Length: 159
Image 1: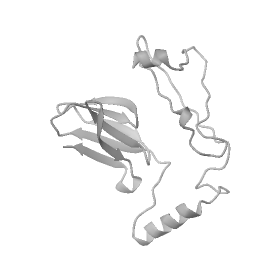
Image 2: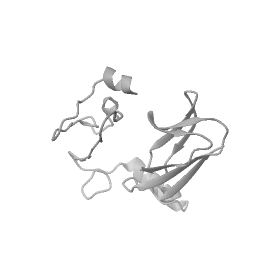
Image 3: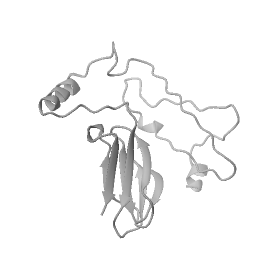
């Protein structure tokens, strides 16, 4: 990981400095070029803070644009007795390795934690739609996607 931090675009930490980037294109789509991660701390402590700034209306708020397809899907799910997802609510995930293989947890493609059968569960704060991957020997063997309709605390088991 350290080698990746030194071989790709990186911002050297400095007191009272910040990095600003946009995570959406001007059309509101996710900008894949904005994917980022944090480098490991080699000495001392790491302090960080996020400030989210929205340049335009967000869905679900008064005056925001309406996506008719999403609205129709939510109505169909409501008729089936399913609650709509809640994308802006922090959820918790607990991941247990009940299998025999030493594995690694990833948030999408970013390494998160070692995930061995004898290790304690991995606990995360997460949000609707986040994808958590388990890799064994570098290959994804399991993917879990957070669904707020399954409750605030979600437990996942690798067998």
